[in-house]
Length: 167
Image (tube, rainbow, N blue to C red; front, side, top):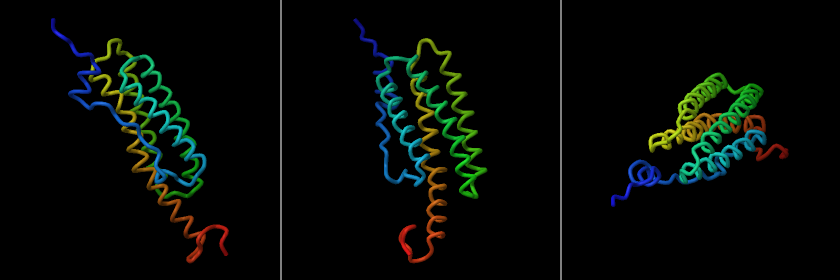
């Protein structure tokens, strides 16, 4: 009798294997309480999605988690766009365009996956794409904004001053 591998076995052998959770790292701290809270929640949510994808047990739960992630991202991006503007960030327009592009891509991926009733290995692999989009955004665009915040903060404190309370 022939043993047929499940979608999970096939994918883990031939495509990617289990994806490791994304750790929260101090370098990701932006220094803005609202953004940092949202980013920590996004990492927790993304790690929950990774566990679902690694288990490959419930397609419906996976797609619902993708929807929740998109909805959270929509709220976060709207809030972050306001903070970018208030901070006078010169890259704010490009950052907002990145947010819009990510949401368009998230919506397209979710629309593609919502109609799947019998997920195949390539569907499970496709469900990883939102995580990759959001991690890339955080590591590239958000860290540029962090650099701006650090530069502006240092300029406001002045040379030789260690923190905002030092005189």
